[in-house]
Length: 120
Image (cartoon, rainbow, N blue to C red; front, side):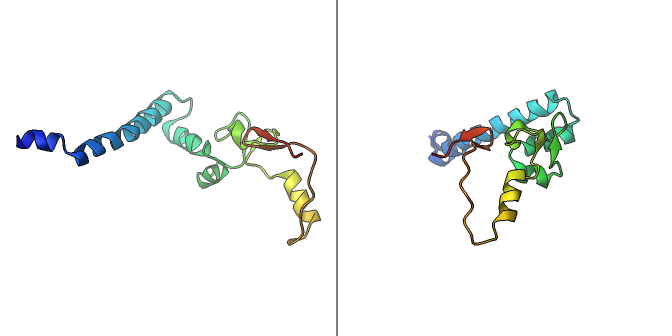
């Protein structure tokens, strides 16, 4: 009876259910590292760079050129082949408008992470 009560404990069941995503994530990362074209350390850095430009900068892979480690299309919103590179249009707009002034609304589509946003 004691064994059955421990086996069906809500805390034990919750722990088992909570461990499923952790195990799945570990298996996914392991398979990625083993099947990557990069050495294991570089494969992990490449995977971290996929999270965004902050992650890429944290593992010293920003900016990254197309075809090199750390380049992900989702981190190249302007499509110039440089992931996490300087935002040329944004830098020009900031230089033209001192802090505290509103930036002009552009008619050109803005790309963020591969998604296109249009202003109406």
